[in-house]
Image (cartoon, rainbow, N blue to C red; front, side, top):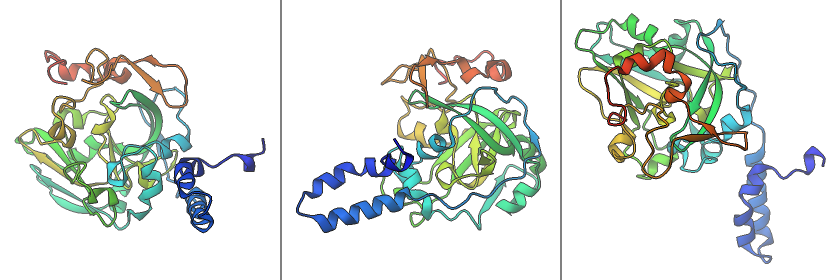
Length: 310
């Protein structure tokens, strides 16, 4: 079959809408097809990033395809279905963009995203990502160490945790017009987790500027934790003395804990975490403790009951 004979995924996804119109609504059907084809149009060329080095801890596993990485996403600010962010995130305006750096630090500041990325050499790090819904990907992120940023801010002795806040702007993020979550999205890490060399602030993937639907222009990547810890479109990083609230543990505390470490022995209340489906593969694979990064991070939790501190 020729490539141009394959039904575009967006048209396939709109098939029920088309059929519901009925044979007598040719004009409406034509409008639906036109909208679907517009959605199927290729995005404008992405901006390339200047990558200084290939970062440590990079896996040699085959990366998930760019198409899957950018069209199978959890980003409720743009809709609750996996395909929604790619279709709806065009309204996001990632430039200009400022991040407030505040709290228990000696050098609080508000900084533009372009200024921030110029201060740190960008690395490519190919990390596994495990979603709490029992699917996984391998992603070639581009970014810089969160720890390097925090050290430059000079945390005070009271800084025990790092709290993150996403953009709250329903005009840019239409999903925020619905109360599916308590907006804005917030997340947090213990400061030793935040300072760990694996923890990344990502500004791109596959050597390109981060696509809107993947959390542009700045998102958190903590590869030994479930994907919901990877807060997107960050506008505030605050160092605090007490454990900060997090969106999912606040919404469903029995299902989503603060730590969210990948643990195949602790099931989600509604499904097993023992296995995962790698996007692009047919067979399931065993889930690895700490998503395969136990050698690097297990010592952070020595003496803790990880079934209780989930």
